[in-house]
Image (tube, rainbow, N blue to C red; front, side, top):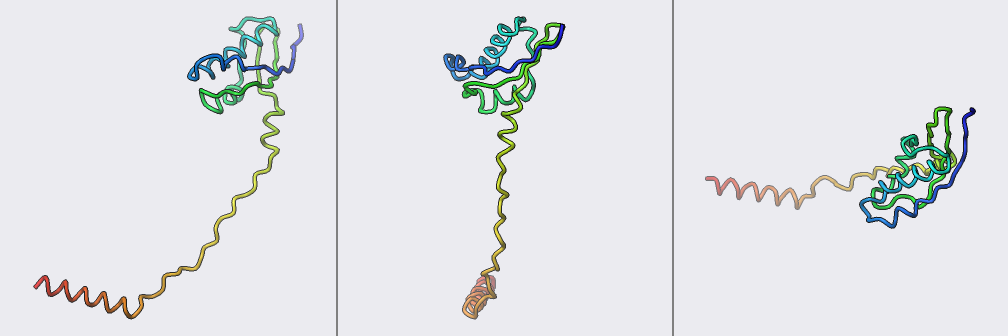
Length: 133
């Protein structure tokens, strides 16, 4: 028996029927159930790729994606391996990020203390000396 490869768009909107704190967990379960049904296998035999799991949890526990495109491979032993479709990864990487421009260093605006400031410092120093004596 040969390896079976398929591509599916799996709807995960059913996870939004459950309370917020269980949505990402439920979306993983829904994905496994969907693929077990369509690949004619058991839920225990469905294994998710780490990248796909990261994608499902990318927006946190409360807001999993509504649908996901996956590439599925079923081996001779009945094990079903699930991967995130490469198009989704390439689409994110295809957007070139503009390099951040570093702010140019401005010349320091602080100058040497003016004559008035020097006088004030001297007067303060004299007052401190008189107070100590």
